[in-house]
Amino acid sequence: MTLTELRYLVNLDKERHFSRAAERSFVSQPTLSVALKKLEEELGVALFERIRGEARPTPVGERIIAQARRVLAEAKRVEDIAREGKDEMVGPLRLGAIYTVGPYLLPGLVPELHQRAPQMPLVIEENFTAVLLEQLRDNELDVAIVALPVDLHGLSAWALYDEDFVVLLPRGHRWAGEQALPAKKLAEEHLLLLGPGHCFRDQVIAACPKCVDAEGEGPRPHTGSSLETIRYMVGSGLGVTVLPRGSVENRPAGPQALPSIPFAAPSPSRRIGLIWRRSFPRQQAVRVLREGILHSGLRGVRLLQDAEAQVTEPA
Image (cartoon, rainbow, N blue to C red; front, top):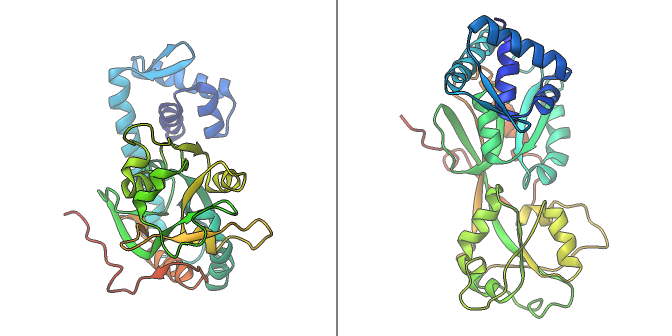
């Protein structure tokens, strides 16, 4: 067997579909299918069941896939060790970011980091927190920007900044003149939320549980696929939404700006941080990335000093 075959195996487990797994592996579907068939013949066991277009791992397949992940991680570690003697600032850095951070942080970060480390280009992936964590542990990413806390098993974390939430309103809304808004009042309006899988959705629901599980016949939330999509829905008059302040203050200025108001104390907020594998050898690259973020000109957040940025890791 080869590392390439093991990568195909892991990618098929992730996608559960031969065509998508082939796309993820940058090969044709016949190439991937033939390679996995050869692997099954070599091992003498069936690794997947083909059920109505879906590929499901067999019980023994699940164990072999788990071992394949470990083998691939160790193979990548060999490459990482080889780099330890080289300049950490040379070579791409694979950076992940959650959807509610990337569009507002990256425009300032990319030129700032290019100034600090011109030979360290970013390979950028936006995704859900759960997916980014999986990609980190599978050595598909080097570092990720997520909302803390997260499960840090095998990972290190470094907090970056705290960010309050604000309420975005349609023009002419009855709350537009308010100085601050109690979170519980959101239950009085049609609230627009991100769909399931977004950690920011969960944070907003935690701030106003009755917005989703309202008593009686209160308004129920609508959902959107991104903060920008929801922003347009608010502009159309469908309802109100909650946004991280950074997504309001770091959006390019334009004629479509909508009014926003802060929450009454205690304001709901989130903490954003960097996470990376403990075994990742390019620690200087992580430090330079953090400095780049802190000096990227990000508005509407409270940057954390070193003493505040420490995150306790599990033993």
